[in-house]
Amino acid sequence: MSVALKPNEIGTKIIDGKQFARSIRRDIRQQVKKLNFIPGLAVVQVGDHPASTVYVSNKEKDCQYVHFHSEVHRMPAETPQAAVIAQIHALNSREDIHGIIAQMPVPDSIDGDAVINTIAPEKDADGLTLVNLGNLLINREKTVPCTPAGIIRLIESTGVAVEGSRAVCVGRSSLVGKPVGLMLLNRNATVTYCHTRTRELSSATQQADILIAASGKPQLITADMVKPGAVVIDVGITITENGFVGDVDFEGVKEVAGFITPVPGGVGPMTRAMLLENTLKLALAQKEK
Ligand code: NAP
Image (tube, rainbow, N blue to C red):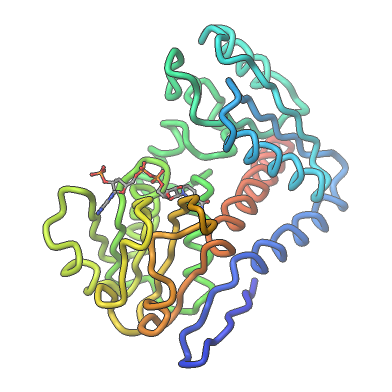
């Protein structure tokens, strides 16, 4: 699938994640029209974390667009963990539900990992169960987490070879940094992870042919830290008075990079599209059985 790359005035290409995601959604909608069943996605949300409520409603809208069945199980913050786990078991056993996600964060009284790992791996639409993360670790990728999956698609869209490249991930979370680094390693990049204990961050980032910024620190990556011509993927989203801000100083870095994703309009829309793609794949696999 192609993606619109918009050259700026000095030739850096801006990767249009919004348009790429739109074309993926359209493609999924076409595929769903041809099916003789309706893929179903269930979301379990415990508590009313405001950002989570927005993310969940976006997921519902996306499902509506591609003609998936979607349902949201909203549970009060004081719900006991056992009740949340029972809800997931009930969804695991339903034939009309092919994908399940547990919206994070959950309240402190609940063990989020225990909730996620109750999801049957074959219905794990976020790819975050230990089984699916383990498959990623041993290079047998099945369902991979949505943000890393979207990042890989954005990199592939540039035509820049991952194999043999030097990739640097700034951030090592289980949600983004670690799995995207593993996906790059599985594609034969040489991967370096950076984090808060990394000494001389810029000497690592300056080596990167592919630079993934996933620290959550606004504008941490400046032009002097970027190798000329590099692919720069900005995962960070911080909400400020001036709107959404990424981890990359976009204005400066776009003068140096070969390719760059904007914030907003880069990784975020692709994360949403990958959830739909994961759900469709899970649904098709369950129907084949
Ligand atoms: P996280 O769990 O807070 O992890 C941040 C990582 O960055 C940690 O590994 C941390 O190191 C590292 N880090 C923080 N400050 C650093 C610094 N100054 N230098 C080097 N490394 C530093 O965050 P996350 O869940 O991975 O998310 C990262 C960002 O991506 C956030 O802004 C989040 O909102 C955004 N995000 C976007 C999407 C999307 O769809 N666009 C999806 C998920 C997340 P330590 O391990 O040493 O603490």
